[in-house]
Length: 472
Image 1 (tube, rainbow, N blue to C red):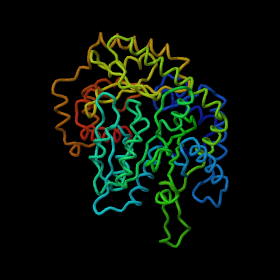
Image 2 (image 1 turned 120 degrees about the vertical axis):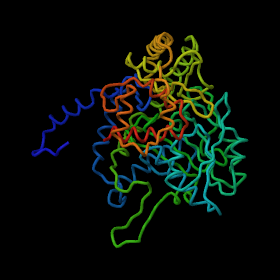
Image 3 (image 1 turned 45 degrees about the vertical axis):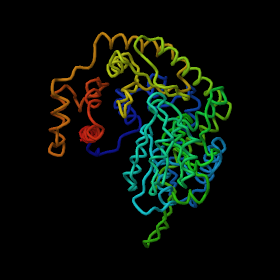
Image 4 (image 1 turned 90 degrees about the horizontal axis):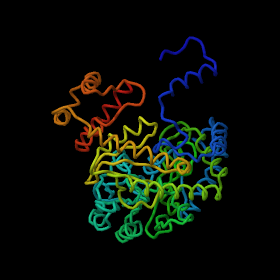
């Protein structure tokens, strides 16, 4: 883009945005089963958007300059704490930032003789690995049960050393939607004097409503002895605009460890509750408005609809030849795999039919699968979704697995990516039919099949280069 010589009008700019978004996945209607969360209630989203806009230019950097920020945050954090066992907290931009602050607080509250470490189930969100990378913490992976996909308490206990500053549990873990044995993990951590963080980014604002709607949900929040912090995203099942999350701490002393202050310069006072300094209060306003617009009654109704849709989806998947649900998810996250057909091809076939079903690569003995996030709007379209999945499964069976050029995996595995510039990488991708500069909704089965055949470290190298190329 070159900066235009003269300014453009709002109508023209909005028309240009519409053109740019023509290949985007839809954010409403329930046909995209990841990334977006839809209540199916336009009036709620409209109220949130209006509040977001009202707070758009308010800067949360200095709470004394904008008291509305303090009051709104206290209300939002208070609502989360009331639902999830008490404590005090911080409003953040999303789950990754919430987790980053929880890891920082744990690291700074527990000084160890060596390099700090944390015990992290292999099914935990990569945000923990990101936090470890940024904050100088080592990750000790914790195995999960190969049938239930829940973290093994025995493996977690074995992973704890004198340098461990945090034990992690998920409620639920994203890949298969199951809740780790939080009480056991927190008890083990407490017995060793180690903090325990529960990643309830997905489930924090969902599981209590599912429980109230009749689901069997194990204890997972700050009311569980030994749990010292918890993350809960409101832009997921809280249905507020992105980015909105809360990290709760069992006591104010631990929360203070998440803060940052600096007086080592002659400028304005610097005290930050989050990783970001200046940021818009728009997401806070949107979250505040969404909570008020729905209320307990609205969230309970959405919980009932979500629970019914998740149960129907699991029943329907079990009736489709060749497919099986992985684990026994308590939440509204459902993963299914197959021993008979290529799930990556199935995902592409569903996309042709207007539905986005999220493919997940194999890892740590867990097979490649497809992930579906069930939301408040899903119940209206669950039968249509099952019909598309059945059609796509039949098409995937007929097509067979993704065909990879002979020797491609070995070639990619042996590549020295540092020796290739972005243009050469793009040419290599194009040679096997992957257009990194294309538009529309591409088929991804071949790409996913290649990635699935590579070790995690090589996948990461490829993904970083992919990101570099598409933004070049």
